[in-house]
Image (cartoon, rainbow, N blue to C red):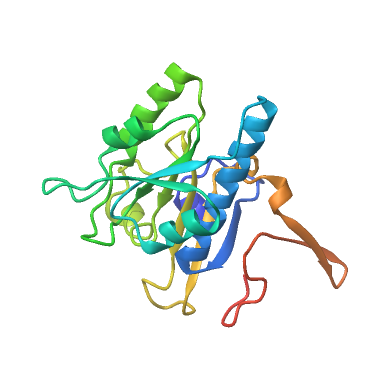
Length: 223
């Protein structure tokens, strides 16, 4: 349901790719790991070094992005805010992108003021840069606060999988109520955007159960 809400390009019988998480913090860690592994695999295939990954965000990101960068050894490149712009400037973000950028993270609902960043403009500018450089820099949308608002209040706003470079989206449930405490989700555009080697296949009671989480057991719900 969430994948369809975010306009994932799924066929009629195609299963969505996503996982329930402990809030958006775990969701962001998992999305970041997927981007890092895809970037590393591509660099290795090209015979290029893959030891200096970076991620581009605005300086208004929630602390979980800083945690991801520090814990998983990814350089965090932050676009500075100004008095006139309290969210990430897409043009400045794209200027900071280089061959080691695993993704650009945009926020749909800034922690500071609730503002939506311009994901459409970011997608357009980054598409142009990818064409010029031959890079494949993707976008992640941190929709923790806006993912269950934009589809209903602003259905024509293009911020989700309708944009070709948006490869994953995280959203929180616990910010809205009527759900288990601490629940979140991360959704990928397609199976190709989540490296298979990150998924563990376990067998409980005779059935395969794929899992991609930092915490296998969760105290308040079943994913």
